[in-house]
Image (cartoon, rainbow, N blue to C red; front, side):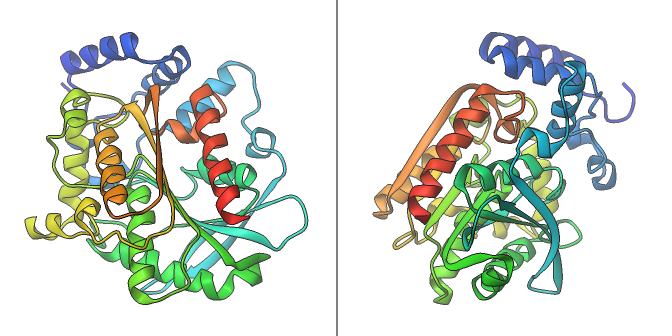
Length: 339
């Protein structure tokens, strides 16, 4: 096998399982991704992993194949995006600010992208953030926090809290309402959204009104039922998660930190939380465990588990029906909370 190529036997097995379990449109997206020849992230050095084709690239390829527009302004009309910087814990962080049409001040959602705290950025996750601006009728600030291994745990968490602090003081300068704030994120960013809500509570900052956590990392065992069931799933598998975590932590001790293991954190007094999961995802069990932990702590929580779709489905509303459903649900929950 050449460098970084997926194991052909595991790859064939993964495709066969997906053919049985995935919705037709999710299967079509998976095939479009495979056609871009992604290497196995868990076999790569970080620099090369960051160059691999993403699910966003697959969405674009599929739209082109169909002769449809790939312009984000056509796919999500009525939202404008501008570049900005926000204060992180160790300097300025680049951000994309998505503003819906209409008369403000709008509520403001601080959004954290996915990528295992190691790869991807705000632009790779443009569709999720842009879609939320439209669905929630809110300004969405999507921020590029510092990544591992250059900046190991807890740099991203420090940046996330600093960005929220900045936003609580500067929302008005973006056309936002500083008393109507929310947190949101996908995957690694779904973890950051909940962890930041905890940190905001502990720091005595103005509380967000809602937290949207899309397929979050919420604990550090790789042996949950969904990790074993989806061990060779795509686009996220068990070996990839281990690769991400190995690049993130300084030592095994970090795995016990409640910023990573959210289910062991003090969750009391958090704002209402919405969790979105995909069935064909190793992280599905994390969402279920987080829902239970939040409920046990007296936090209002709702979780939806979407059948027939995989990790990263949320940002693929241009081609996936369940993504459109999940985006509408998230938007509705946020709009209700933000008023």
